[in-house]
Length: 352
Image 1 (spheres, rainbow, N blue to C red):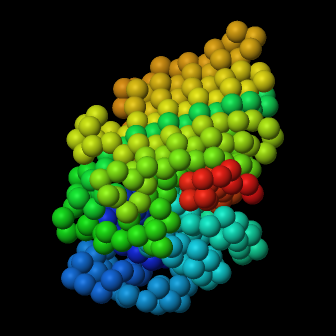
Image 2 (image 1 turned 180 degrees about the vertical axis):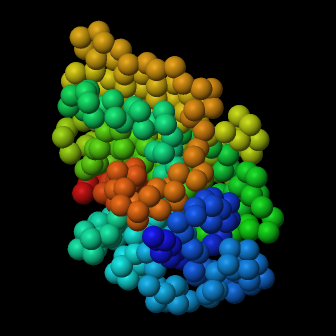
Image 3 (image 1 turned 60 degrees about the vertical axis):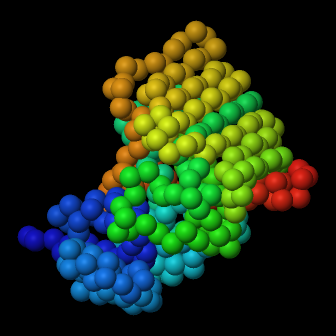
C-alpha cells in the first residue's frame, strides 16, 4: 500500500528557510512541497521551480488554503503570531522560527491554539536536536538536579555587523540576504541581540530545566550607533525562587571562526550541570558524588541546521517525541525576553 505524501507549505522563504528548512524537507521522501510564500521576486519563482511547489505566492492565505499537513513559518518575527495561528487553525502541524513571538501574550495564545486544534507546535531551536543535548535531556529526566537555585546563560555570536547595519550574517548567501528591517527594526524584529540570538540560548537552557521567569533587571548596549541592542546583561528571578543571569554579546565577524559560544550552568538542591557548546562539553554532578560526563565528538556542539524541519515531519508522521522544542518552551523564552526588554527600556525591575 502506497501512503499519501505529507503536504508541506512555507510562509516566509528567506535566507534561513532556504538554507535549512526547505532543503531538509525536500530530502524527505514522505513529503511533497506544495506552496511557498515570500515576496514576489525572481527568487520566489526559482524556489517554486526548484522544489516543485505548485503554489508560489506573496499572500500567506494562499498557503493555508492548500489543505496542508505541515507548515513552516519563517516570516519576520512580528508576523509569527498571525501566521502561525492561521496555520494551526488550518489543521497543520507548525514549525515556527525563533523568536516565537515578540510578546508573551501572543506566545501563550499560540500554545493554547495548538492545544485546541490538537496540532503540534515546534520552535526552531536547532541545538535541542543535537545528540549531546538529547542525551543530557534524557539523563536529567532520569535524575534531575533537584530544585533549581541558580542558572547562568552566556552567549556570543558574530552579529555585530549585522545588527549595526554595517554587514551581513556569517556565510549569508548574497541572493538571499533579508531586508535589514527584519533584524534591526524593533517593530519588525522585536529588538536586537536578545531576539536574534539569546532566544536560542534560552531555548536550550529551558529545555534542560524548564524555569519560568517572573522578574528581570536588564541593561542593553547599542554601540556603533546601532538601532538595536548589540549586548545584553540580565538578572532574573524565577517562579520557584531561583535566581539567574543571562548575557549576550555581538562578536565581530570572523571571531572564533564564526562559531557560536554558549555556556549554561545550573545549580540545584541535589546537583548541578554545565554545558559548553563551543567546547562540546557536558557535565552533571550529583550531590552524592555521582558524575555524568560522556565523551563526545569535538564538533558535537555545532548547530543542527536540519533538526527542526525533520522534527516537524516526524511529528506529522505520529512521532510526537520528535518535538524537542514545543510551544510551551518557546513561550517561556518569550516571557524571559519580554521582561528583559521592558526592564532595559524603563531602567527598573520588570515583573510579570
